[in-house]
Length: 118
Length: 112
Image (tube, rainbow over all chains, first blue to last red; front, side, top):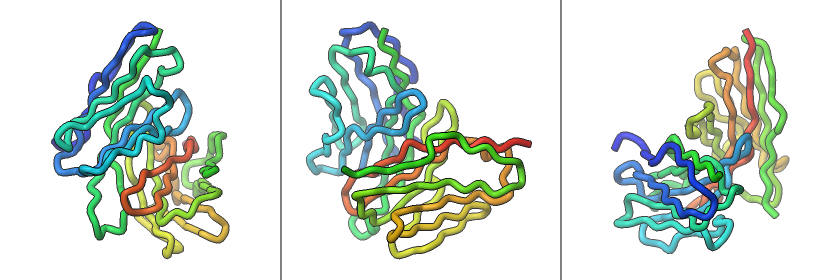
């Protein structure tokens, strides 16, 4: 598509429920990132997918968080047994990263999914 | 541990003046540094990229400097306009297939 699409744009859930957030990156972009942004805060790195390599999961805050990327395209971020501190905007970004581009990964972001855990 | 610092307090300036935002980092050897703009309710938008071997980059009213000795980047907006009001984020990358790490951002408010 023309840009990075995220859904849902808003999600309100009850504590303890599971949620799934979806990201549809720009077609052809090999890299996909998930970040979390709490109110008034910066972007907290969560996970990074690059092509067929094993994802960099070093930013996932707990084992309640997981993400997958199917077929090198669409990604789903799953949060199990949600807690109130999970409330934030979850941002997805994609990037065209290829050998020889000096690794300067310019990201295109989606509008984000705002998660509110009651 | 690696740290990226941006002024947490909002920067308020008068229209027409030059806005200067700072990004400092420690325990990091970035191959490049990027600046993004974020408006409320939206994702960040890429503005400029500067590599470690570059001192300065310009794009229209924007200028970025990168001092790897001081471990600092300065982001300038000349002839600022109220439409420049937004949060500006710096991001560092080590190159290759490695994640991009963001600072917390600085909010800029340009007053008419």
